[in-house]
Length: 70
Image (cartoon, rainbow, N blue to C red; front, side):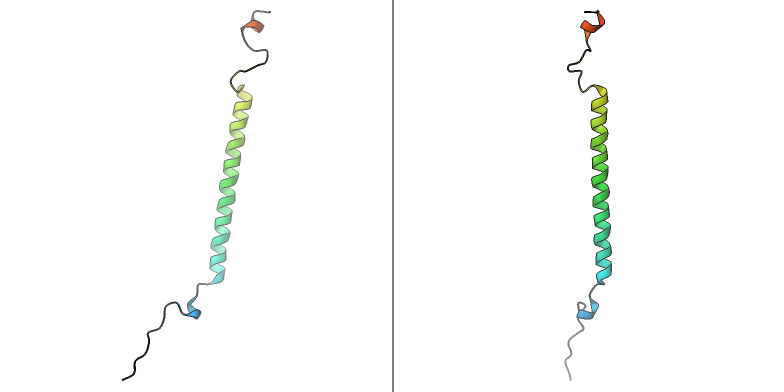
């Protein structure tokens, strides 16, 4: 009777394909870039809303004195 070791599921020839791993990493990089671009666009939109909205009405010629003609 001979004892044989069972085949290892992680044998050197059973390694995952390096191309598959690189594709997954590239997909993650694209997703990170897309999220960063969306965050930047949201920040720019918020800045425009605050800028065009007056940002709280501080300073300038607005107010009751200019309406009264003073």
